[in-house]
Image 1 (tube, one colour):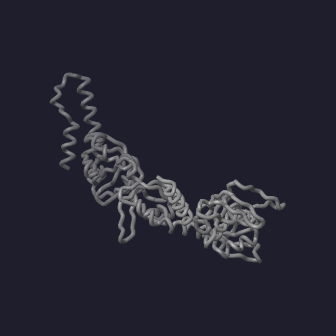
Image 2: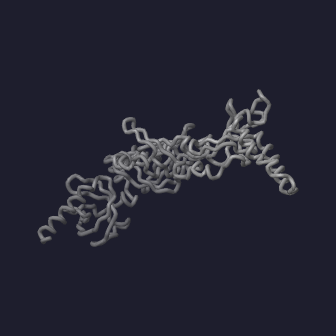
Length: 387
């Protein structure tokens, strides 16, 4: 590339960088000249930005920077020549500068000192500020103490008592950032994508997850785990950062369905190898239905004990013999892993035990024909299938 072409490329890139600088943005630049009232700062654009000399002096009036130093600064004006404020970036602004920031809608830096009634006490430079609880975050704060001691960017929304008291909002800035990134975030939300988000709220039917840019998806209770979930709040809580899989995207209705269990192995994928007819297993009663009881053998694997195989007398209320939560022994009657179904029996357990005792006795005595007893377990399975 020739020298003129190189110069054009350099100027073009500088022009692009300059257009990206907006009011309220915190940037870094190099001090290139210091005058009596202002200093010039190279921020990578086609012209230098200006900053008041008072911004570069310590409380005793001595300059804290020299030509060639790099300094952080906040853009207070991007109309025409860029104007910067170093004190806003350092959180050391004067009362007058805070008033200017309020008028211009510029963000300021503040430290959350403590939670108080209805909100937080925030120190912005040397000024006391109050941030209402609802304005600290875009999601409900469960533990107010989690923000104490943290340094955030705030927007001044009200100045009271001659500038002595400020009311600030962090939420206003967060929502602006979310709106700015929403379009880019939606491009990444496609079926099958694995994303990290933050839980915004938990309901009885599931949880809403912010995927960025205030784009939210629903993690339904049925998609939280392979094991049955009774209370979503036992799995996630507001503010939790979680990784989820996008299951469905309905662009017309702007609905996004998310899954958590899909990131783990489906236990039914190995059920055909793990469970076989005739096995005796221990499980827990999870729920009852008019036709029988559901038994969880492991997280995500449930089988049905028909009422006729419960071992209870006819017309007996299963809630008395197989109450939810009880641990019981069952025998596996039939397994259909593809259909995610398993048939179990409680009353058949004793029959299997009897068959095992007969087989052990036959092997121990050694003088009875094997065909005399046959495989009682096989006969039991055949009988159970027919029942």
